Amino acid sequence: MPDTASRPGMLVQEADRFSAEGDWTLPHYARLSAVAAKARAAEEIALDRLGALDTSGASVLVDLLGADRVQEIDRWAPALPPERRSMLKAVAKARRRRRRLPNHGRCRYSVHWPSWAGASRHWAASSFSSPASSG
Image (cartoon, rainbow, N blue to C red):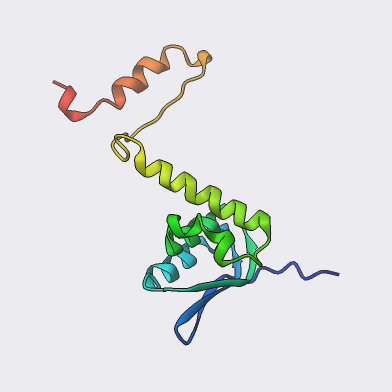
């Protein structure tokens, strides 16, 4: 029977470089983010001991490595399976695109109402009006 237990991801320091090990997945996101925040000065990170990887773990790795460096992952981590390199590059591309969006971070609410919502739409819109627009 295969071992299905999750191995929490971690960064292991080996001399002057780090190694990403274990599962970099959503259940471990908060801890991985905290670990990554402490390792911002990492010049080199080996990915050959990486366990499970999903988009939440990929986003932490992109934050740690930098979107520009991840775009060159085929050159510096050729042994990483192609589907993992593709996921990391897709997350990095999304991060770069997000930074270029105008007014990023200014929209506080995004509400999409189904047609059956009817009159409640007016009530909700007035409930979310900004203090500057009232009175």
